Length: 122
Image 1 (cartoon, rainbow, N blue to C red):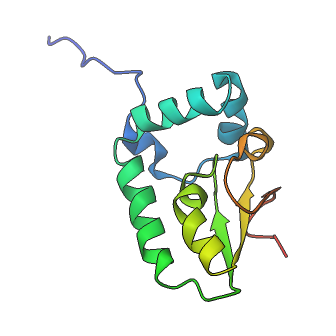
Image 2 (tube, helix red, strand yellow):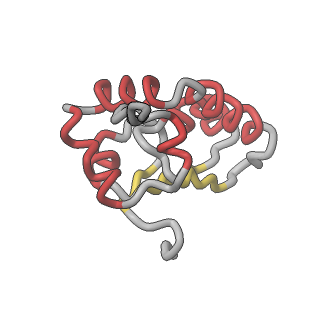
């Protein structure tokens, strides 16, 4: 009889491929703030920087003068910080949405951060 396979309890990047639930996102507060949360995200999602920078690079080309930009699932503002120069140059506004109140409180980027569900935000 062979031994049963070992099961890892360590979370992998694949764990986060699904859309996080409100309970998942509310756990952010226990990380001890923005820096700890950002470090956790980078550990769990090694491609986080690349994906955030790519999103900002694409968005930069489509922001019109006086435009309105939404950052859905803004987290602590990585994409907003990347867009800061373009937003200022084009006098565009940014509205950052996230379901987690702790993340909205930790948001540090241009624009207005709002705690809301993007699917029902009006």
